[in-house]
Image 1: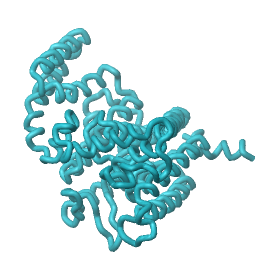
Image 2 (image 1 turned 90 degrees about the vertical axis):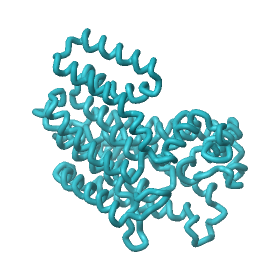
Image 3 (image 1 turned 180 degrees about the vertical axis):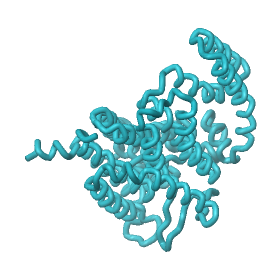
Image 4 (image 1 turned 30 degrees about the vertical axis):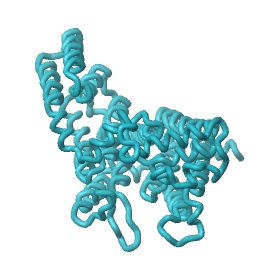
Length: 408
């Protein structure tokens, strides 16, 4: 019986998912337990359970639909997502200084969350055609345009953290479908230049290395010249981009480099998060026993910094279990992408894994102070209806493609 079910259901993916959901509910209950019996908006645990149930039902529905339906609806869903993002600028609900939500009665959602899976599907459908060689400029530009449009619309909300997800999607999906390593290096170079441009010596060294690479690789003159000047331009416009960031966005980056510079202001979140995790020790203080969590010293403890709650109350062991579950989920996702015969399905699974990996890496890096605070939720654990439902929808797609892994 089990072996028969295993042919259709990936239990490794399911068990790692269930482990993350349980861990998230425990952390969320602890971080909001004082209001469990209240009907107020702080009753995060009950709302999350409801969203989890809705997402679970949607995951089951997606699992059973014909996988060709997903392929056929890719461009349509992408169009709906773009329409919703544009609509947000006109009737969007403002929260934390940004227009990110659409309100329908008592229900509000973030179109940017839905746009992640819609973009993955649209890009995958376009590049799954083997005649479209991404090493040819025209095909690469057209494929990249699917990512650029939502990136621009979301960064204008403004939501820098979510917009970077669409940048992160590009390289793994393109490389998976045949983009050469040499072209991959050329695509990455402007982003390296962007960071190096804040220091003239670093900028000069990177540019010299790039010129040396172009000479040794014997790239065509037109390509070499285009790459050289595009990197120069990137270096020149980076200060302009920096000056156009919102004050809170610039402050997050500055404080990331030195949180102690403003311990009671912008650096407070990172400092309290480190204190919470460090005080957990090996086994933690115990469920609902964390002082940082229970006394509300830890800001955004139910969303962005929920992993600090796990670190404080369950210690190193709890954080290790969480990381292991994420690692299992991601590695299994890559394996599924590799075993799926259908080219479109394989690319979609890889795109989904990339989104989950990016969120996990950025959120955990933020919680321990290795990355700036971006506001990206931790998949399956952080509080949030749009994020939870979208993530479970993506898992439903992965399970659907696993079930149909032998079909083309």
